[in-house]
Length: 112
Ligand code: FES
Image (cartoon, helix red, strand yellow):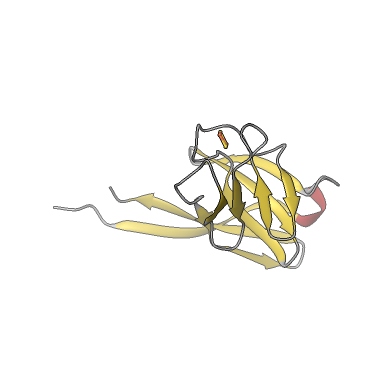
């Protein structure tokens, strides 16, 4: 029998905590996530590149994309899709919501 999965929106930081670089890394429930200020707003994505798990915290953000500093893969911050290799697997995207100064993210509990 498959366990039931639940999601919950949890507050992860305030907008004011995001440094001038536009990126903030947090550990939530065992997920290393990156909060990024992109062109179209706040994005919350996995902090680890899908190519060789290099941390994206120091990656360059251009418009709504982030480039991995190790081998140059580029990911779309809205869809997670790979826009430029060598990565082939999309970046995990976390649903988020901004309320006033607070940023909330949808975290999965339970499930497989
Ligand atoms: S680890 Fe990110 S592109 Fe290779």
